[in-house]
Amino acid sequence: MIRFDRSRVRAGPGRDRILDLLERGFEAIDPGRCVREALCLDGERLTIGSEAFDLSGRRVWAIAIGKAVASMFEAVSERLGSALRGGIAVTRYGHGASTGAGVRVLEAGHPIPDESGAAAIVELTHTIESDDLVLCLLSGGGAALLAAPPPGVSLEDLAETTRLLLRSGAAIDEVNTVRRHLSTLQGGRLAYCLHPATVVTLVLSDVIGDSLEAIASGPTVPDPTTYADAIDVLRRHSLWKRVPLSVLGHLSAGAASWVAEEAPKPDDPVFRGAVVEVIGSNAAFLDAVERAAQDDDCDVVRAPGPAVGEARDVGRELARRVGALARGGARRTLWVAGGETTVTIRGRGRGGRNQELALAAALEIDGLDGVCVAALATDGSDGVTNAAGGIGDGTTADSIRGAGLDPIEVLEDNDSHVALEASGDLLYTGPTRTNVADVYVALIDGS
Image 1 (cartoon, one colour):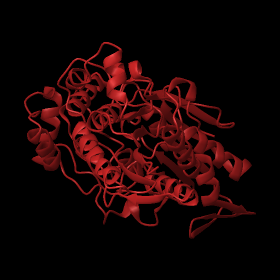
Image 2: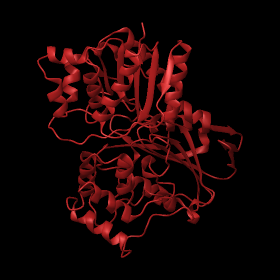
Image 3: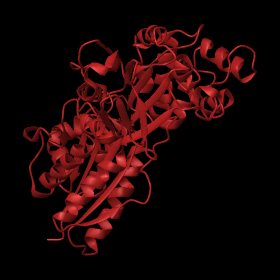
């Protein structure tokens, strides 16, 4: 069970209730639970969602990529037992765990890629035969963890390109569009390596709307984008002349159809018979939070769409909306949303998009009673910090000032971690070993 470290955050009725509700959300997207509910083995018959497979005389392998793979792989081992021949799990540093006999667990860097398990996965694909069944377990973070640059592009150049994209404020779908075209396994290319084996993909989605090509950069699904799209992303963010020359050369060659081939598209035969099941998502987390709030006689306002854009702008707008509800005399109300914001780095501070959002929201509701806002990274790690996010209310800004800091200045310096640490408003869960994007909640206490 995922629990917040409440000894490290200021207590208060609204704060405590928000943390209670978020913990209920984690229960709904527990990776092991989601996998166990998706798989059913009855003798030699394996049912996955609405599909059934006869395992008589065939081998079953598992390839897991992402932050939640330890729990997902453990559940697969539990469900399949000796029917599982073996496999490989690649996860973020600190997120690994025992997954069963015959399984290799490798850890790698995120969000900046380093040595990953790509080579081991490619080696495994060489042993997989046409009659085999391969379970691909995907969760958030897989795009960086499956770093497999094409010939001529070094891992260091891929890492530098990723770093530039993340600092530019590019949206995650834009980042993934570029990464899919700098990979030999993503954008459907892993499915190509596994063909003609049967491939079933179970997805714990960290993407709002569950766009399959964006989750772990879509290693087993068609890629709807092109090399030209990747170049457009870099140009839009003024990075085309800043990326390493090897990256520029590879994307240019791909766009001109000189050397690099486009990733497989929807009509490619490698996807015939492939099955993809989304077993957990941001929406499932929010649904659980909403039900728990309603059971507690709390009105719920669900945002009509995902929260995207610059983190500080989203935080200010969120705070304005809930502040208006509070000033209008709203009864006990919970406002909920999911999304993934961005941060354009302007300063030299330390933080993450959720901490920056929480700090910006706290400044907007400075001095207002009865309103509390929280922003959470569901993987337990926000930005380059070990905090999962931040929480703020009408007293947060004053607490930061009491620590000798100017909250406006620290926000401008992207130093939200230092500010929220000083005010006792950081959220800590440790590695959750799951990931369904970010969650934002605001509680308005009408009393």
